[in-house]
Amino acid sequence: MERKQKINKISWVIKHWRLTIFGVLLAFIVVSLVSIGVYKQITSQSTSVGLKDIGELSTQSAIVREVNMIDESRTIFGMQVPFTNSKQLYSYEVEIKAGYDFSKIRLERNTASKRLTVILPKLSITSKSLVDGSLKVYYDKQSIFKPINVEETEEARQKMIHAAIKTAKKTKLFENARQNAERLITEFLKRDQANKDYEIIFK
Image 1 (cartoon, rainbow, N blue to C red):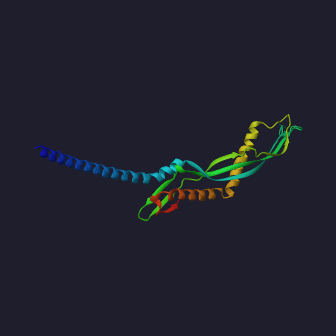
Image 2 (image 1 turned 90 degrees about the vertical axis):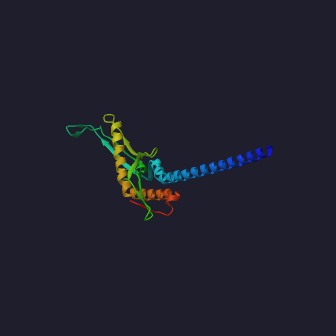
Image 3 (image 1 turned 30 degrees about the horizontal axis):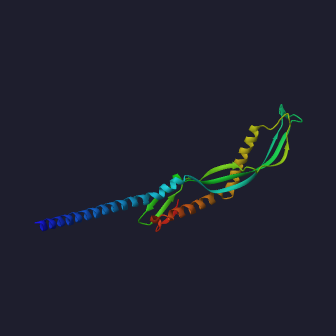
């Protein structure tokens, strides 16, 4: 009788042990399938999300030295009053940066042709500023009757910045900014294994 009870107990343990192993394996398979699905979803979205996280990025900069002269005098009835002339001749270096808002980049994936099309937004000036410490004064004569004021100085600086932008564009600032952006984006996309077999083209 005692022996029979031991045999029944062993059978019960073996039976439940098998059920436990089966349950663990089943749970492992389910978790694995879910994980694979999540991984694929994350992989497919990681590229576009990663580009959006970059935000606005300058991909090319140019430094242009602009020369400006302020020549002001008091006038009466359109005539310059003697000894009221103030004149400044100086130059500043202006740094101009161009780039893209990466959050506006769109990606189109064609699985049939294995092409990944990158649609870039409009290229823009991302930064424009006078370089600190770059001021060079060539001539400065101020009249106490018509001193050059802060408003005139600021207006002259803004004109210098706008002139520097035109000069920078002539030096292929935008062309170089686009080339650098394409190179940067290509390297970024190639890091994703999902894109390794794709041809990357830009529009």
